[in-house]
Length: 70
Image (cartoon, rainbow, N blue to C red; front, side):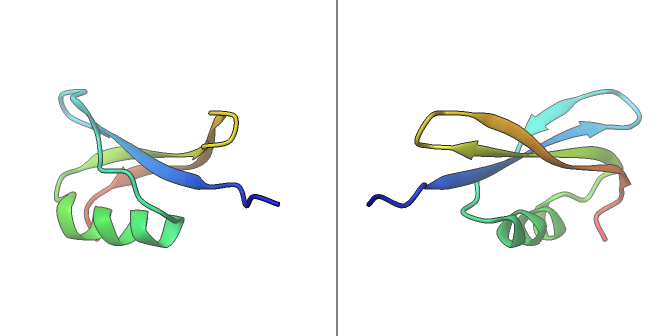
């Protein structure tokens, strides 16, 4: 039996100018938070998506409004 493999993606949208950026994919949600803390140093909204590799389903996992890099 094959285990479902998933990956997580974070989309950030700058609060001031609306610029969007897809961050590097991560293996789990904990890694997404660590990546954002390290690299995202701007005021933005964050949308975290989970992509299931088995059927390519993408679903919204979490939304963070007014993230400021802390």
